[in-house]
Image (cartoon, rainbow, N blue to C red; front, side, top):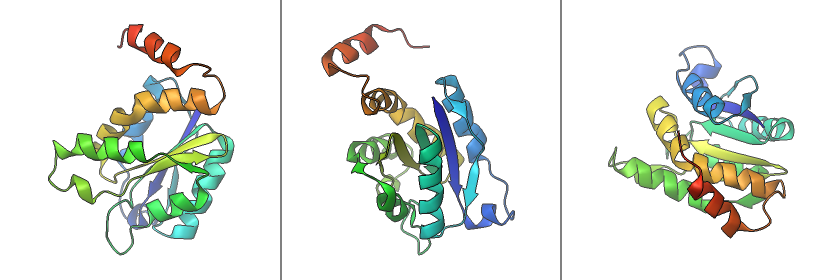
Length: 170
């Protein structure tokens, strides 16, 4: 399976700041067996984000974005994501906020969301490198199952869950 990391940041898109998030996410995704396509960096512009997500979803099974999920004036990633989603998966945002609450009292300000776009899954993550890494780790198991389901490879969820629970984790 292929994955793309989309970094949403005005400063990083202009080369004014170094991206430290994509390498962390790429390492997690590679360890999970994904082939990584080149990182995409876009400014905090709703149309640019939506276009990048659509383009990435047409080329891979998983699109992971980082940044623009807060409540600042330029934070529009969830809106751009909803513009391209066929089906929203609210549980992913809930899971990410839950794992973040043990790290920061501001976790509930995150508006990260997820869903499907065609045959791909799109997941928004926070902009901080550590937060993005922790949140991706929190949703990676359901991402893997969700991708199988999206591809039509899951016939019986109970069988799949039982198989997952028997498989030793690294």
